[in-house]
Image (tube, rainbow, N blue to C red; front, side, top):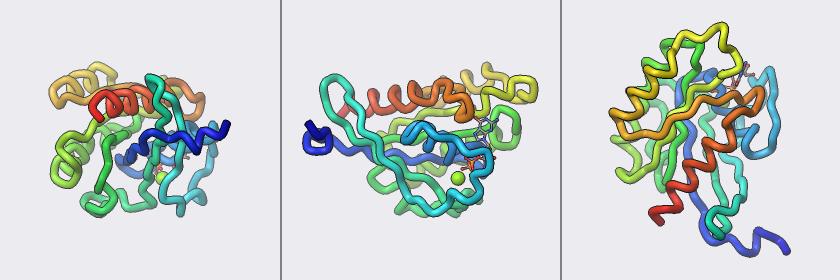
Length: 175
Ligand code: GDP
Ligand code: MG
């Protein structure tokens, strides 16, 4: 049968984080199992969807991507409206992108629903030899702030699906 006819829930999820950390590629990897080395031209899509089954429920994830509005405070509150989950992405090879995570959490606390589920994601896990952000730093921050945490690689695909599924499962637990 057509799964589209049987959707139990639509969950809006937003992907946020500094520019060039791999937000668009993580989303393409999850939604279409694609990766583009030069993704400059992939701008323009507002969201992508992927339908998954969690605990017997058919869940359509509607995942929103920023299109170059990653400057501090440039993402509008409309972007966050109705979002049940957030993927907050940094790049394990760019210290600044991790230092800015705290700002993105503040953004979420200011504009998103207080019950939003947040998954902190350290991307570019394939570039281990260029790592500057130890996983322990992120684990500590995530524990302090009550966030989930995962390291991913949009390039290899490692942990991308499991990070999204964990987020969707947790949203599903409370709806
Ligand atoms: P965004 O600005 O956060 O949406 O970042 P993009 O998804 O456009 O990715 C920025 C750049 O990083 C592109 O050149 C991607 O090919 C590259 N990139 C994204 N994810 C990964 C990854 O997991 N590993 C590696 N090595 N490069 C990545
Ligand atoms: Mg992008």
